[in-house]
Length: 295
Image 1: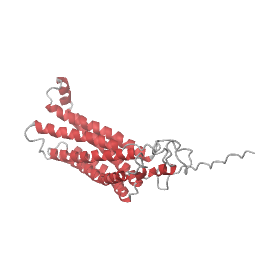
Image 2 (image 1 turned 135 degrees about the horizontal axis):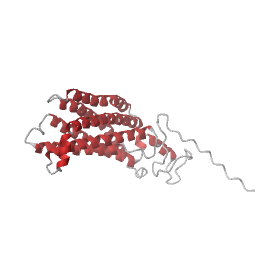
Image 3 (image 1 turned 90 degrees about the vertical axis):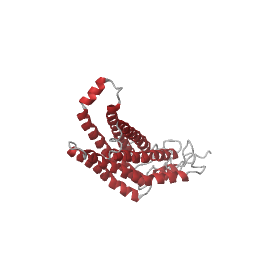
Image 4 (image 1 turned 60 degrees about the vertical axis):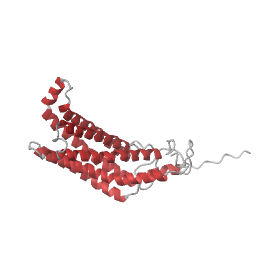
């Protein structure tokens, strides 16, 4: 008599670790859906242990491709943030805009545009969505928030820099120059408000996103610092905007009120991210074994 085939053990429900904010839903190696698989089994596509994929909640066990994008993003964003802060500081001290005519002003505007564009690319990479995470998990929500605000502040900043540069571009059509000069006061009021409100929202979302990564690294110190910065950085930016709005009709001090608070927020954000950058570099350096090189 033929014996019935042994029954397979029921699939254990996929649950995140106790400290996790969401469940890993895909294989870390080939992105195969983990739903319905036994937690003690393996991925049917690449034979990666399901338990190893679930450990992807811990950042050191996440996909190497994902970690590399985060690391590259910070590698670009941190120097760009320091460069932008330095350029704005020098501009406010009038070393580039009041010496030797427009050539130095154009240089300052070009450096500002370059650093702003680089900063946007860097933080875009840094907020790469976790491939194995659910669509509506906290980290993906924070990532989308950073990216949307980042696009707004980058476009507005580049437009404002282009408006300033139009003073030195004689080849622009006359009707465009007439429109710019006719609406100059309105533009110089609207651009700063849009930029710094978007920058405050970006700082808030970025600190929240960094706090989630700190939890994934089990770095309580970074999580505490990110919690403080989540409120400190937007407050600095909005304080600078408020100071500029109050004193914008006076000469000399409006730019200082407007810029130095935001410069301080950018510099603090860059300094706080250096710790995470070093940890990501250390994690990537340890993923060198044959079993992990393909992750």
